[in-house]
Image 1: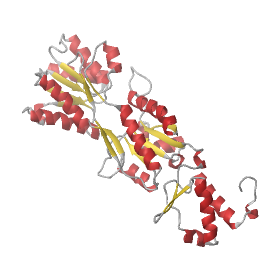
Image 2 (image 1 turned 120 degrees about the horizontal axis):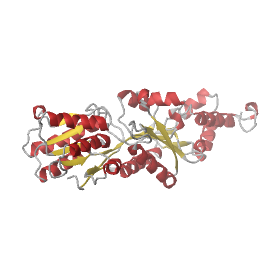
Image 3 (image 1 turned 60 degrees about the vertical axis):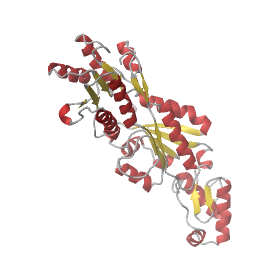
Image 4 (image 1 turned 180 degrees about the vertical axis):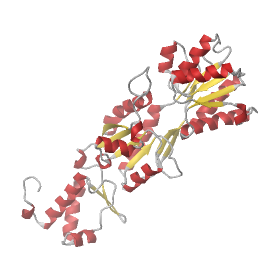
Amino acid sequence: MYDGVEQRELNKSERLFRYLYDAIRRGELQHGSRLASESELAKAHNCSRITVRSSLRQLQELKLIRRVRGDGTYISSEGVRFSSRRNIALVGDATYDDPFFQGVDPYFSHLMHGLLQNGNTLDFSANFIVVQPRDVNFMGAFARQGIRLCDFDGLIFTRQLTAPELDLLEQERRHFVALQEPCDDREISYAAIDNVSGAHLATNHLLDRGRRELIFFHDSLDIKVNRDKMTGFNRALDEAGIDSSPAARRHYEIDPMSIESGAEVIRRLLDEKQTFDGLIVRGDWAFIGMVNVLREKKIRIPEDVSLILYDDPAIASRVLNLEISHIWQPYSEQLRNALEILTRNLSRPLPINTVHIIQPTLVVRKTS
């Protein structure tokens, strides 16, 4: 039924049109998917190809389908099903899991602000889907919240997508852009920060300051962005002729990235009499813990040891009352690039995989 008109009162063209219209609205025919050919539709619905063409013409006028010469007919995301505005969702970890700070993760907060800011300009409705640690993957988050992939025209994923997640997105023919490279060699669209370059930049700055006993503190190397940072760090050491082998103890993993963990690891190194004159720290709370211990031990910053934070310095600067040298990552530019890729692909019957690599910047302050 539709608009109070009984199905039996409709002619064949109207019945086919409303069948397809309702199937698109319900998500049974998902945007980006290819519609059956005219002859296949005619056979399936027991009507002529002229009837099929008439129905498709109406759907095309409503921008529910897009016909590509020599390629076929595709379900579009621009039609009335989406109230003339596309639905785009930002999917990722949002909570900041630390006893000293309860709220939205600063990274996710930057991205949320950027998504809302660009909504009117690029004409889309912004949505936010939080993936919690217990969800394991975004499918778990969607199931927990009763969300369907077909509810959205496009998605932006803040964290690295796993092989099963990519398989599902490809199977469902979803338009999406990631903010990290994929876990495998699959070709997808993503807009990522060049973490190799960022760590190389930070390390070279300390080397230029005459520092030679450098240590890099990071979280799990199972995460590709951390492996990229280690690559940049080790590359700069190798170029300077400094031993970067595991035996040299140039880097340490901190888990969790908390004030206590940061304090514990730096206290242990001092107790072991390990010398260092330059530290690069991934994680603002671990950075705070380290600085507290250095101050307690009367180790001067930057005279005795130079510090660079590989994170947003806002929280650490306030807590420590310290101007912190840091690697600035242009998250607003990253999101804008992702949105540009996504909106371009939404206007195409077949997406084009596009990669944007954004360069971070070193901001030099008192700690180095």
